Length: 158
Image 1: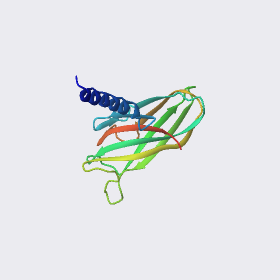
Image 2: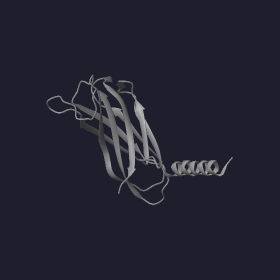
Image 3: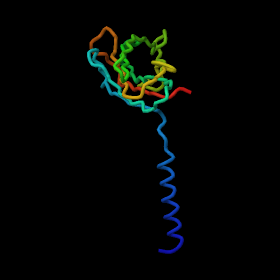
Image 4: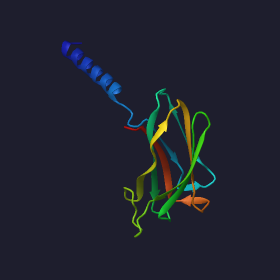
């Protein structure tokens, strides 16, 4: 192997190492649950994330909802249960509007619409350990058509 090949391979190796270690996760936690265009009201989607920090922090928690044009409503009710590592529960009923009064969708996209739904901004989290967020669709229909998936995004608050 000549000197130029060694320099080229060494440079390539250093570049690969740099890229591997410089890539950082965009979010503290992110997970998507596919509900297959038919979200049953009896089945919660459960998200579990660990907080390892021993210093109390605040977190922004959001859902990302993806629906298609077969969704029949302009709003969406969600039931949630947030469980901290000590077993304390915070239960909520949330309503989000996903269409305008004229019927046009609020989210981004062509046939599949995607929108961010705020669950909690600057939620204080003081204990390290495992947190759970369970979410059910709270509409009056057993099998909610038109929802493709729901994601949970957790970020440290600034």
